[in-house]
Length: 244
Image (cartoon, rainbow, N blue to C red; front, side, top):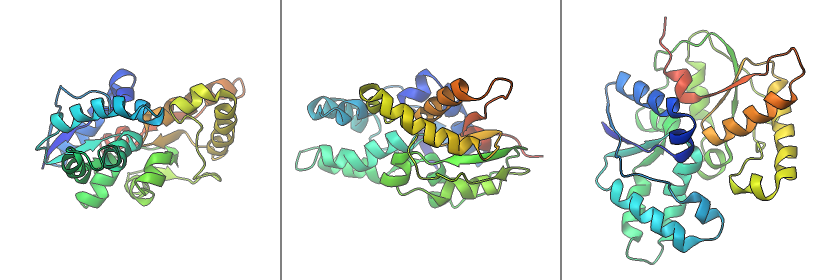
């Protein structure tokens, strides 16, 4: 397939290696990738703040940029949910509704795309570490993605996958939520961060870079001195490792 990479703001600005890892995995599987340079923010911050007119302005650009793409794949359940679930709501009853529905049907989260669209569960990776998986809220609740990333991780050579005791709890980031309600956000991070740390994992794997930043910040500040905190890593980075 010819795949258009949808690179969200957090990846572009803070974790560009995640976008490169996505391209590495897809190209290793024999597909071609392109990055359409006109892409910008998906509009989620404005949408979540109630500024729907401003969100539409940004979303219209995405409709133009990704017009005609065979498939649009992004490494963020949150931003993919914005395009796939909320764009049709934004433009319901408007001239852009058909284009929004068309883009939604061609947009996929990275791990979901591998398993559900390409039928791939083993990409030939090797990652000799104990890991646990954190479900981002949008990926889990809006896109209904639960098993795909775990299937991919189970097929990584020498990787030990363990589940935490709060697998469906939110990490507390929630974009603007963490800014408006920092005390609640921190309390939620304590619950989820503690649950993940109790697994004794080396790495916390996620499909949402924003969740990684929230968890990494909390764990770095609250892990006892002398004990290195588990590191966060994106699913694509794990899958991009070379097999033995």
